[in-house]
Image (cartoon, rainbow, N blue to C red; front, side, top):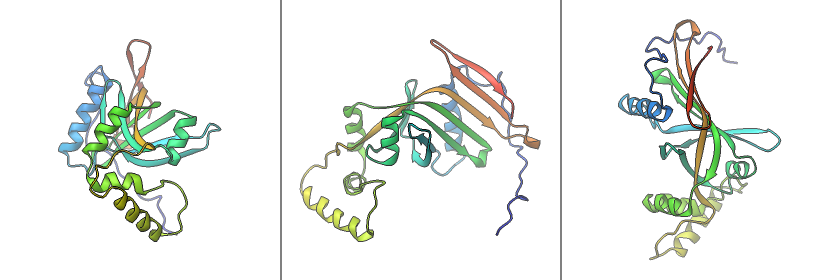
Length: 212
């Protein structure tokens, strides 16, 4: 068994204070996202999405953030997948961005809601044809007998849309995570990390510091 307890890194790249961050967490996220892009982080929009069943059994996976604004953070998936089923029954979710090369994390908690069919259509129509096909081909999160089953489904879907516009499947679309807390984490030396959390009240964001 590989021993892991000796793996240690002291974080020294940056610091984070209440005085230097933006009063609006979405603007602060924009700043950090742009810095992650400039830092050439591989897929800086990759995020861990955690969901749970109504009785509290959690699951998590990595998905891609596709847009964000003051209303929330948008991602797309199969509504009949495990995450889709869990969000349908329990809309509370959390997303985490781990930009480890920058010694940073962002953690966002909130409520996920389906976006409009028109918004989902617009994004679906912008995708490459292979990705559009994939949304029809894969019965996401269900058991399959093997790769051959996917290849057979692929042939059927290709025949169905031969010389036709590929439309969005009704079981596929977007969610927006509407945040109620957004935490920014900056690694510091001796594990005394900087953690700033924005908490949404009725009409404003309150900024507080958390102990590491």
